[in-house]
Length: 443
Picture 1 (cartoon, helix red, strand yellow):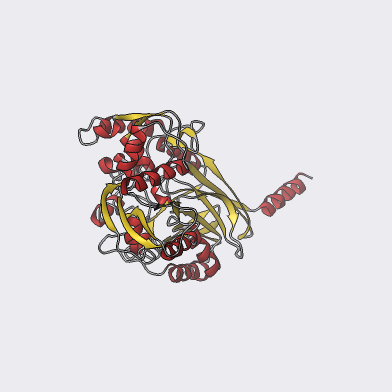
Picture 2: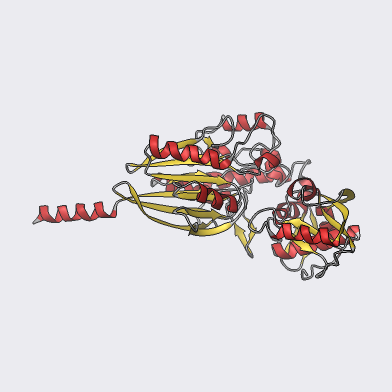
């Protein structure tokens, strides 16, 4: 009887199959301290994330980083300490994708950072990088690869780095993983915009799971329409960690389950990392080169959401340049502003790119065509916030204000005018707006 029960138990366990847990974060951008996000204070924090990831890794979870671990120019932590945190993940992270900001300080700098790591940095379509890695967990072989998005050629100005076609590279790697390596599942760390991830999944069968982002998107686990590929994205700055469980029956993927785990005060911190971060932050704030960033500029009597922040910024751009309309990519606005004391470092965290305001004149019909181009980019970092007249006369000429990034890169082809520098900078104009009067509702 006992032997029969044991056989039944073994049969039940076999029918359930093996499970593999994957944890993933992306676009950390040197946000070591907790911050204000999604109308909540005290979100994120690297000490909390490392504490959680380390515990789960000891239990057998695979831990993957989506890259963009730094961001030159903001936050100040990145400029002072560089890639100091990357080795903190040794023994915790199993592989990292190469992100477009990871060589912000130059390729030799990046190479020096990479030499301190015990985990590979992957990129299937970037020269000089390992294309994929295979992990065996509970007898299950997981093939993991990474892709540098189609926009890397425009975004990454690092001599020596070349980026090949994403779909061609993905097809080659998936074929190798499936037919030569005989893996049980294929996972892509996609450092590309969400719409590019979706397009790639439709063009390249055989990818079981894509871990975003690059679009700084928050999205719960979902199956990409028209494919058998699942997708999840953990937002930005270690606000969330993606947790996905793959269940296998006889080495066939039978079930995919997942959720986003919030990184907040409920997550037990690594005491070692917490003490290290506190000491480094004190050092940063007392460094004469950076101390002014932490001095009060004024006080906000209420918080400003990202949408309100964008509206106030566009209005400030229009006022400074006497423009009829203004627009800026959504990627220019990364965090809300919290109620209370405002510092320049708070502004830099909310608007990490110190763009010039440029101006030009457009006929109404050209402006309408530009708005149509903007609308076609919904779901990408190139989609824009717009402030301007509700109706446009096709024959009238309009004065337009935008950023140098929009004019030179994001909409270089669509912006059919000779944009000139205005002498104003976006963040400076918003600072003046916020510190000269009390915040008011965006419009």
